[in-house]
Image (cartoon, rainbow, N blue to C red; front, side, top):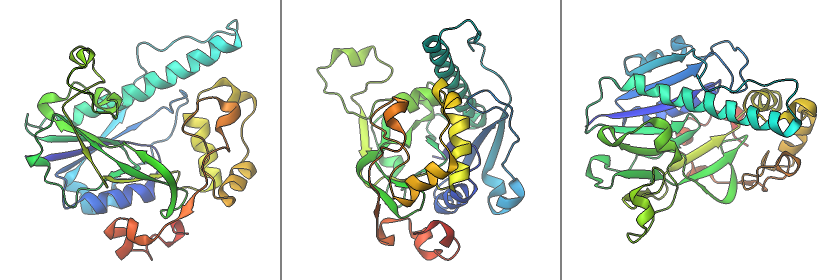
Length: 296
């Protein structure tokens, strides 16, 4: 059984470096997809540079997503504000889903029994004490701790099921796997027989890794927000670099993951806590000088 670690890439070079080094001894192939468009639809310059990752060259399958999805909605000047915002959001979802599903093109040589991991680049699974080939359940979900800005600034009381996995023979699409609900439904739930997001046959991995989100400067986070957040309000009233820096200095998460309204979402995230390096990947502990810029 081979393991394919599949994820999208934007510009998270330090996190990518960390991911490749942590998972190298467990993973057979890294499938990376990068888009020539932001999720907002703007053209962007590709950032991935294979020369910086020569050590992993034989394992990397790099894909360029250069298509606009066929179902993109046309936004008109005559659209009312709410309708325009709805189309922005849907178009962003279509672009993100299209990019993620393009990962399938990197699995042409995968066999039915091979294990496929789907994540974002900053969701790093902990494979240290797991025998994936011994897991009989159809779906595997990794329960991950969440960190902001620095590798050791943890958001307490939140478990993130970022990395999800299944064997190639079960994989409907990468986005299908991404959409699976992080809940094991009881056997009497008849709706699971017809659902593509609710499953009974799930294995949860405790201590399943780390979600290192927004390991960036304030200016880099602003650039990401402009590229990724798609409510029309962000175009009308963008958040400033200074405001983002203030939120970071106060050691608060940039946004509240429990709500989806821009008015309350930005700046109202939970208070971050500095954690011991013992909670972090062994490779990071052993190479803390290399990553000192991103350790608080």
